[in-house]
Length: 111
Length: 112
Image (cartoon, rainbow over all chains, first blue to last red):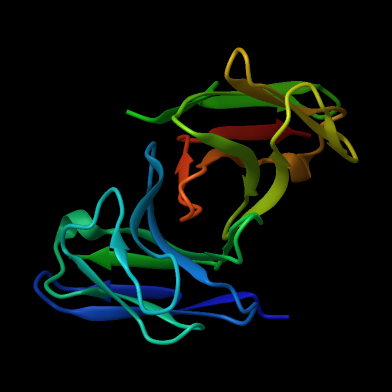
């Protein structure tokens, strides 16, 4: 009964380092999403994948890349981390006309 | 530009009080409005509203949608400290991609 699993839960990076945030869902959902949450800003969509094999930019895609590895997994990559990317990152998925299910988030700090 | 606005931004009440949280929206091709509760980690789903005037209830929580005036309210009666959380409103559109627009959230704190 895992739902949406994100790894890691916490990460500290130095400016310029790269890293990949992992997300996997076991609900056989077609669509997956990456959000960032900053104080006072709500959840903002970074990238999404409407179905396996497709990815599209959301509201704030700059500085990020994504890969829909298969139907279960959707990863978010920071190629050269910047302090402005310090945030909490959430992955979500949906099977269509259902509410999105969220992972527990990754708290990322960039020094 | 599509947008979702929640009010108030934050609220402090005492146990037993009743609270009303507001969400207004301006979006094209509205499909549904959703409420989520976020404590320390993942937002958890509360309600999905698609039709005007039909109240949805779950225990002490209830919500209703007004598609003419473009808003929704979330009511919590007899509040408890466990209701302390951020309440998020989101709107889905008929785009086929199920992308939501989220409001900034209302931070509710319930004091014992």
